[in-house]
Image (tube, rainbow, N blue to C red; front, side):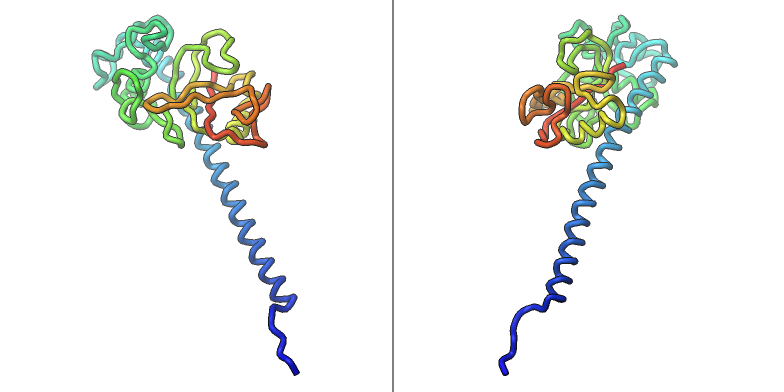
Length: 229
């Protein structure tokens, strides 16, 4: 009698079950990681908005725009006082300083956000501004760099870029209407500040959004958004 070599059907079935369990674990792990990133980004937006309104309530002025920050907030530099015109502006946008960077010093040294940031002229660094989980900088500013870029200027908090479009879609569904060009959370071309920023692009195939929906089927890895106040 000849001895047969090879696997039995039971052995093959066991191997297939193990492979299925491993793949399921990997996919579930990726899903958990993505969910954690979504929660992190939403928490970062909510926490900063709460700090913004808390600062406004306490000082009757906006962070970064506050002209009396130096005498009234411990350790705030004299050169980081704003012009108190009711807008958090860049120098290019009309500010006497880059108020969108001074805002982080005002908020952190007044105790409204974690960390300690100190004003310096652009570009942003880890010493002057907080970053998102993808190491790109947040920005709170008065402009119209959100949605299609054709709306009225208003205060908004930018997430920073380098965020995948499918994660942006999930964030928008959880906090707003799911549309990148409508509602209170919209797409933004802000390049994440600092050095080497590449502006996100939307409105065409394989980019952050297509018409009125975030690109989820084909993921773009360099996207960003803005929460409107």
